[in-house]
Length: 144
Image (cartoon, rainbow, N blue to C red; front, side, top):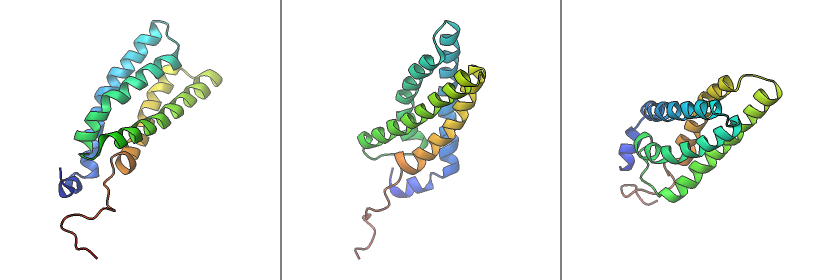
C-alpha cells in the first residue's frame, strides 16, 4: 500500500475496522475470561493469560487491515506490545483497586475495562504503533 492509499484510509474507516476486529476478539476473550473465572481461576490470572493471547492474535489483523501498515513489522510489533503492556497495567490496576479494594463485581469492571482500554489502544495504534512516517522524503517530493 503506497502513501496515497494510506492517506485515503480515513480515521473513521480505520476505527470501524479496528472495532470489528476488537469486537470479535474481545467477545471471544471475555467469554474465555468468564469461563476461566467460573472454573475457579483467579480473575487477575485469567485476565493476564487472555490478554497475552489477545495481543498476539490481533497484531496481524490490525496492522494490515485496520491501519494498512506495510512498514517493518519488527519495530511496529515492539510498539504494539508496549502499548498493550500499558493497557495491561491499567487493566490490572483497575481490577486491583475496583475489585480487590472497593469490592465491585469483577465481571462488570472487566467489561468496562475492555471498552475503555480499546479506545486508548486505538489512539496509540493510530498515532504511534502504525503511524505514517511523514518525515521521510517521497519519490515525488522535490529535493530542497
